[in-house]
Image (cartoon, rainbow, N blue to C red; front, side, top):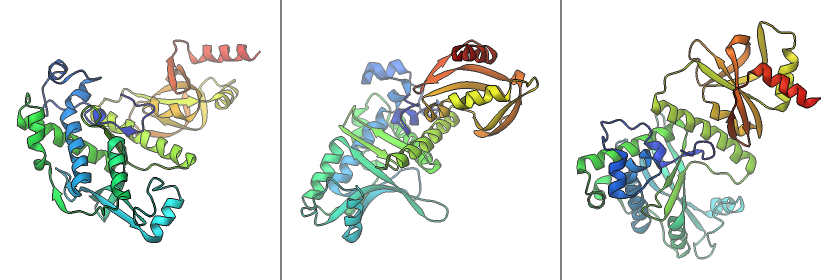
Length: 343
């Protein structure tokens, strides 16, 4: 799974640790009938990929609103932006590919709408591949994208059943509903979702915010990536093994050495966030020294560490350019090696 660099959950990742009650088919069974895949999760997500491709093409071709199955008051629909709002947003970088005159000074977007406890929320859906081209051509030819009618999953099931005839209809529907439920729970949790259906349709979509300003996008990337890692961890239901992780860059590592030269009982860390998932710290610096710290109980996904006993600290390796390289040396040997290299 592309965990480190892709901050949006892929379709395959939505099916992480899928219960056997959804499907008991083996990976080899799917490969034999529907072709090779990179993972078991990708194999069992094929009906969902095909369904997503059909649904998005139908939305753009027929201007339909799609009612998301299994989730009350949730749907995919068009948003119209016109007048001064359209002009302002185009100046800010949005709708750059839309022709002013041919579109009649109007921009359109797709959004994922859902009902929260207090009010309705929504996420922007960014389109790519043939979907983007089809949508832009429609806007620039003057098509008014407003909802004509509602469609549901049942409208697409006959085509999907025909495509996956080796599976029972009941199993196909369960797999698709599982994908929609996982996608919705991820979005509500604050994750971004990247939908790639190129195996069946040349179309991709990303549900979540994308910023043109690099600093904003980097912040967005880090937030969504951490949420994605935690969501996958929760689906896997991995038991807590008692370890939290920290990463020190060069300056923090030098300070760590200085603070602990005379210490024999405690190691001191200054405002260090300790994380349950070590991959969360990879993007912060190009070069990090990674340590893990033993805890008696689970204290949440992260917390602020002030001090810890020496025997509970273990050096496990370095992260260079966001790639982790494990090491067998102790943190004391690491300090000697580091100081020797400085001489």
